[in-house]
Image 1: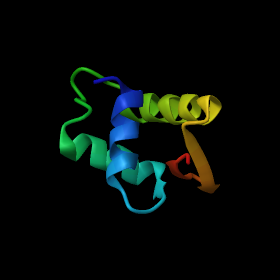
Image 2: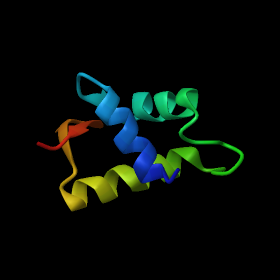
Image 3: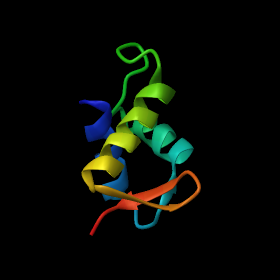
Length: 70
């Protein structure tokens, strides 16, 4: 699973906006991201969130907090 797919999966499972650190934690706990395959998990999640914002698939609701668009 790509980091973008992992972030999308976590946000789609959530009933509320999530801080990026919570997104990262949930992606790791659910096994969506493997720290052995993605050594820089923090960077990967950050890049994925920025890409989802640019694509309009996620929305920033507060500092560091995101939710799926629409």
